[in-house]
Length: 210
Image 1 (tube, rainbow, N blue to C red):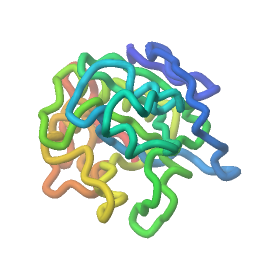
Image 2: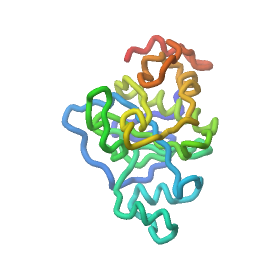
Image 3: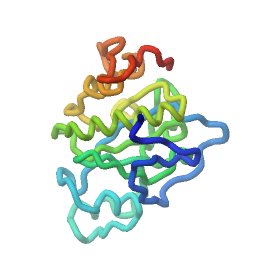
């Protein structure tokens, strides 16, 4: 059984819901076809605490840390945040457009926010991610793919290479692929991915069609 399920309104069972005001409607008829993986920590390199949720809900105390002055007035969000322990928080319905990718392009297709779901991992480019985060991301990916015609998984740096570096070199794409059991074609920016890696205890992703 998939630990997460996405309901018709775009909300995931098993995720804590913290509603962000930073979203709008997807273009009419737009399908969710891309999953974008990010990392975030606030302040940078500091894990735990309420700052990320406060940032995504426009309630961050910008005077509480020197770095926060740099993001004063910024309005962003992601659909999901996966904490270091694997706990999942959802800020925006998957049916809506979260503001996570910014100026972006997926193989010539611009405005990735229009057709993607954004998942933030609590972390930093130079810090390895926790095994619990990979498990939660794989389970969430399974649920999203059961609900939407997702054709690819990419990093923020892949779709915004001149602006962003996340999820960074410490993110192990092979670990995610193995956990999901997906063919390598689902990871178009990652070189030399195996064609198919069966997930433990699951059917091979080779049967899934992008």
